[in-house]
Length: 366
Image 1 (cartoon, rainbow, N blue to C red):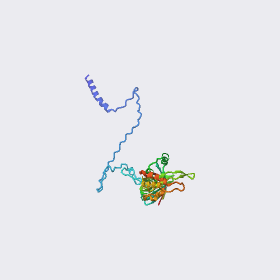
Image 2 (image 1 turned 60 degrees about the vertical axis):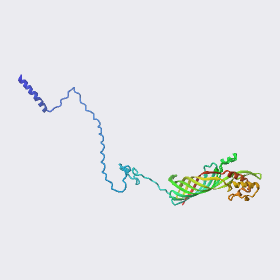
Image 3 (image 1 turned 90 degrees about the vertical axis):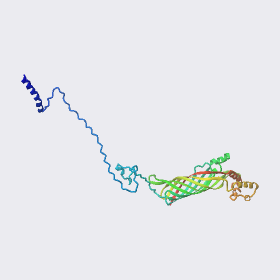
Image 4 (image 1 turned 30 degrees about the vertical axis):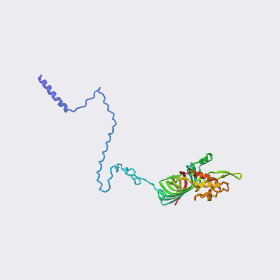
């Protein structure tokens, strides 16, 4: 019994060592074991790209010492993109440190040239109590490209009170104050003209025209007149005849103007001008044809007594001949206008008138 137990103990201790030296062999598959299935391959997920390490900033060398002030970091910004330094017609347009201003040259220069402008038709556009239509002529010397000296003149070949004011006279025997209805006959001024803006535009796709915005101002004198009586109808030799309106001169007044418009240049020497100008003139009616209130009182007394007007001791400026005699065509007695003239200067009136005109004309440059 004891030898058998000893043999079993030796066999138990030797079995693990023998098993360690013998290589393992795959056990035969069992009939009841499940059949292994090969797993389907899964698409490989690409690994995320790692960001490239930023290049180390280059060592900045100290700028050479100079007397010029060093620009601050807010003024000079580094340009990271090399495309921003790409030159477009010689200028880095994408560089935030560069500001480019482009001013295209005018096709035709004005500096040192003379310009003569004729305005065949100048019409008042703000007529309330007055109406004016005339012709103007301007001379401009372009001292610089955008600045010139100008001399201007205007003659109103038609100047009359407006239909509204004439209707008041005819229906209700009322009219605007003489100063508010003062008429401008002619004017002459000296001033300046500036051209703050110019450009070009295509005309019918085949022609390139040059235009300019012009602003002007000036001062001078103007001759004025006032309506004494409107047109009247008289019966002469059994016929109805119209007696034309009677106007009286009221002397020279201060005249100023401001305006603006466009000048379109067709070539080197021709241009078209369209402008608006406001003619401002002082208006005071205290004399008509040079006669004041005292003169009209003497004329009225002389008319009643039949005294010769030359013997009345009138002022030197009074043109009494305009209130004496008879019109040979209409048989109108001019002495009847003495009362009307007296009424105009009986209550002297004053005003400042704004005569807004539209100018359309053409120029010649040389």
